[in-house]
Image 1 (cartoon, rainbow over the protein chains, first blue to last red):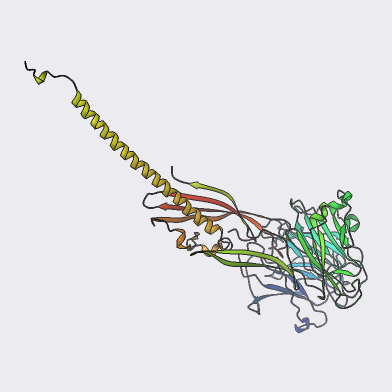
Image 2 (cartoon, chains in turn blue, red):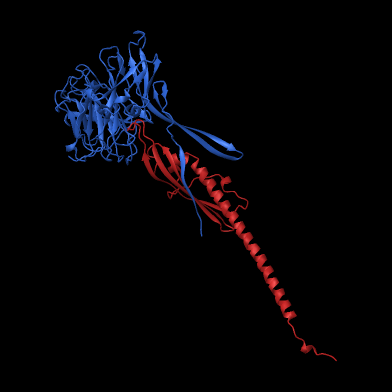
Length: 406
Length: 160
């Protein structure tokens, strides 16, 4: 079937509903949240803000998802009320739903896992990548990352991760959904779990996209077993369908090490082939990445949590806010990596950006003019993370000339 | 013996009259030239004044972020950029000035790199704007149009 994914990116909101409140079979019905929505660029309907989707599928998780056993609900937040939208015939908005998390079976249910893309208007499943496909028998609990690389308003790629430490990329550039594919890019060692969406950044020369992802099972914050990683993966197949060689594992990436709080990078190896694939950092014992990464001005921030800090297993553990310059690390220059320990906070939420314009009127005699400064940072819980001078709102004169009659 | 005046020869009188006429012409021409030069200078001054007024208006607009960020709020019913500007921008010594903003529009935009591509922290866009303002003196007819191009770095969807 022909279809084009309209990008509805930005934030995503998850609504927890009680599935048993719905009528029907109480034992086999459960819910999955869908990625919600706001148009990235031009979309003729400007009323799509603050929406979220809830998918409920039934009756049995042992059968693949189909239009027969899946219901999709869209809800719009309107002045603090929830208002269902019954009809909206504008374009083809397509929620991308993640499938498969089940608290009891966790990630062992192979029949209903992966992602599914739905025509919001008809409820028809446009495309799915789930347990009947090879190697996708793991739950996708993290939000998907939808990329509109050419800013035409339509999704080009979707990155998603699963509970088996795997990074996937779906190519949706074609208007024919039948040729859409998903490829596994990377697999972390057994036991690694991704619960946050990957962050995707364009390189300075636009030759590749960097994918930043971190593992950590935040459902078990007290479990200090297992090793977690921060990974920077260079996806070089950004302009075409996937044709490259699968990287496969961490063995194909370069390892950046921390020593006494400072990253150690063997600059003699910066030209190593592994650098061209990406790099990874082993986190400390019991340290888990507990937020998605957010990048602006070439600075990436994310938070980690260690239940048992080096001083002992007391209180809410140790929380670190990392600041890295992923491309600087790759260049082997100043490593561009640092972290700050913030105490007594517990697990921090994912960073949330905000932009504030501070205005003041400046007068000289009767002549007054508005002066404004724009502040654009991110919040991780109560902590404000700054991204340096982004030049937001800066104007530079480029040309000037006089036109006058001869 | 008495000589008849008819026999006198010489052209002192016509030459004198001619010289007087020439001097008059030169004087008038000089005065006229002086007046023309004065008018040229005055017009030049008025032209410079118009340039300054147009430049002031340009600076006023370009220094206010609101005209970039909320561009659509400053369009009139015909879709033309028509901001409400303070009077002091148009005031001059003669008070017969007409100022008009010919156009103010975004020409192009390019997105920056080094930011989350999924829109969670939208990449900044470098936009190119051009502002053209004309000021004309109604008495002298002096008119100046100042065209300026600026780059403006801001969030996406601000290049209409």
